Amino acid sequence: MRVKEMFVAIAGIVVGLLIAFLYPIFFPPPPPPPPALLCPAGVICVDVNVIQVGDQSVIQPIGNIVVNGKKDIIWNVQTSGYTFPALAAPTGPATGIDFTNTGTKPPAPPGEVTCHQNSPTQIRCHDDHGHLGMWGYTVTLSGTPSVMALDPFIVNR
Image 1 (cartoon, one colour):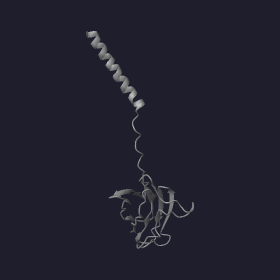
Image 2 (cartoon, rainbow, N blue to C red):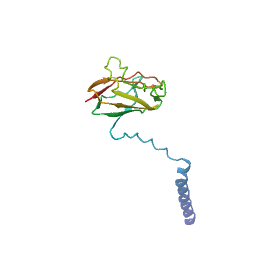
Image 3 (spheres, rainbow, N blue to C red):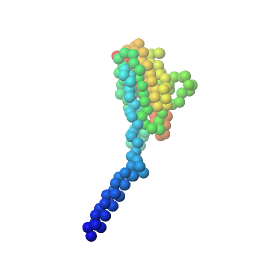
Image 4 (cartoon, helix red, strand yellow):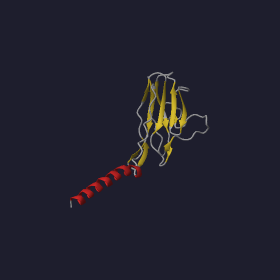
């Protein structure tokens, strides 16, 4: 009787070890999430997210961006399924971040902020910091469901 119990115990250990060894091979863990985009030193990085408010999808409000001195500002779309609008021409100005069509908010002086689109989800602008003041800009995204443009401010101090 003891031999039979010992055989069952050893068989149980062997089966347990096989399962522990083979389980990760047949059922691997999910991949880690993508690393967060690092913001280069001396650059202001702004995350652009789409959130749900009630039954509406909206661009999450962006606080005033305060700029002290000449700086680059990078806007990164973080919500999958959304991008900045495609460029009208490969070398044209970025349309997803617009410092000229600002609705009722004052636009930046001409040439103060220049932007180019690095990718469908990233726009990099350079603030020349030639004038002090507070200017509106427009954030526009393409995606489904569609979202209304957002009109935050940039502040040169």
